Length: 351
Image 1 (tube, rainbow, N blue to C red):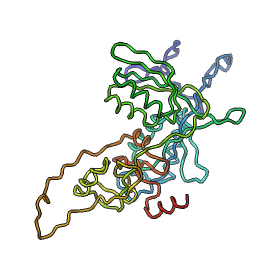
Image 2 (cartoon, helix red, strand yellow; image 1 turned 60 degrees about the vertical axis):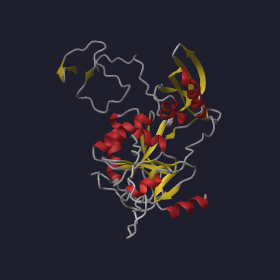
Image 3 (tube, rainbow, N blue to C red; image 1 turned 90 degrees about the vertical axis):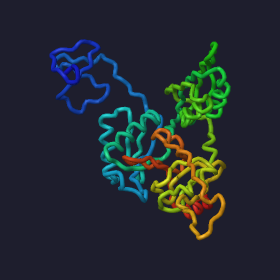
Image 4 (tube, rainbow, N blue to C red; image 1 turned 30 degrees about the vertical axis):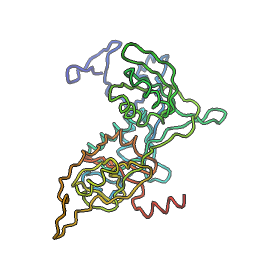
């Protein structure tokens, strides 16, 4: 038995209640197990229950045209072995191979829990792709569909409380309490876990960054119906080339960009968000046509707005069901699940 002392461990013969200890020499120990004296065993202690995961995501080997340029470990078999090792130490996760053997389904306690694992793996040199997180549903005894419900609390300035309530309403939130003082309003909501996807960004936008949001799992409740997804479409690259400032200057007038000049792009990669509904295929490598004639204004200076960069958690919350997040040690890219524009049109037509 060891206790933790300074930056190391010290071996001890006894430990008091409340001490954090490390035990060496016992194999296959699991959460809730009791370590006791074999001559006078103690079995009266109640086992510790681990809360069930509420959100799942599928890890797959990367199929990007740029695969292998940044990551050292790109194989599907190596990805599966790494995730199975994670299950031995991360007891709150549920990890299993998908039925078609194409990936590994990892269920955890929310998007942040899953993104921490992804960040750890990309720092280890792994390169992979993941789909949109899906809520883990259950059924009651009568066969009714249940989904995880979370309790969300928001502290927001009084001037923005109305907008915050509106955002929570569109996300399926039901207000349970509201307390105001001279400057701040404290709001409490019950909201489905599906509604928390991207909620933090929306609340910060409407409050000009002054709101504080916190949410945690409460219980499983009745399914609250379908929710509206992302309203705006996305800009999708049409070819595998480097982006050019001249092309981006034109595209930034039609939406928000996710890439800057000189970045590697490929067909099917999401390079921006359109200002309108519906996806549009764009050419990010279109260069200026050079001729022997001059025209007024042709040589104007190009001024590009800095591109939007996503953290892993933000990227997972942004994508739709037909999109993927490509994770590498150096980059986080968004892409369509089907890269070919022609194939996407065929799939949409068949659907």
